[in-house]
View 1 (cartoon, one colour):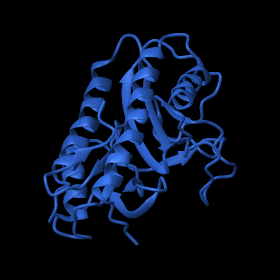
View 2 (spheres, rainbow, N blue to C red; view 1 turned 45 degrees about the vertical axis):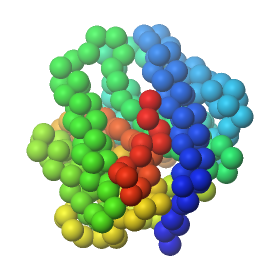
View 3 (cartoon, one colour; view 1 turned 90 degrees about the vertical axis):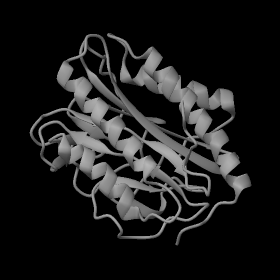
View 4 (cartoon, rainbow, N blue to C red; view 1 turned 180 degrees about the vertical axis):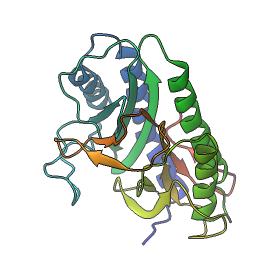
Length: 255
C-alpha cells in the first residue's frame, strides 16, 4: 500500500533529508587516506546527535540479514556495491567509496547515498561515479505526476546499460516515509509506461547502482551484509529521497 504524503509531511521529510545531506557532506569531507571506516561512522553518528535525530539503519534486520545492522552508516569500498559494514579498514589512496545514510527526525525518514574517490582518482572510477549520478538525475527527471514507475526505471537503466555497466540484479529504490522501506519498489531497469502511476504526494528513494565489469551478479561477504561484485570490479551508488509533486520532483536530500 502506498501512502500519499501531505505537503506538510513532505516539508517534515525535507528536514529529515537535510540531516542526511549534512551527514554525507561531513563524512565525505572526513574521508581521507588513513581514516578508518569506523571513524567515518562516528562522524555520521555525531551529525545525528547534533540534530536530535535517530538512525533507521542501526539495528535494522530484514529477512535476509543474519544479524541486525551494527552501524548508522553503510560504507562500501571498491568492489562492494551496497550495505558495507564499517570496520577497522583504513582508506587507501585511490579507494572508491560509496556511503549510504539515513536519518529519522520527527517520525519521518530521509535516505541518500553518494560515491567518491579518496586521494588520486582513476579515470575509470570517475566515469563510473558520473554514470551513477547521471542515472540518478535521469530517474529524478522522470519522477513527475502522470508518469509511471517504469518510466523512472527505464531512464535509469538506459543510462547505465548505455555506458556498458552492470546493474545489480534485484536491487533498486523504494518508497519512503514513516519507515525507511515502503511501497512501491523502484527498479533500476524496466519498460516505460509500465507500473504504478505517479501521483502528487508519493515519496521515493531513487538509487541507481552500477558495476564496472558489466555483470549483474554479486555475492554477500562473510558479514552477511556487504554485497560484492563477483568479478571483483568496482561499483558506485547514488541516491536521493524525492517527493513527487504537481510542480515537479522535489529532492528532499539535496546537498
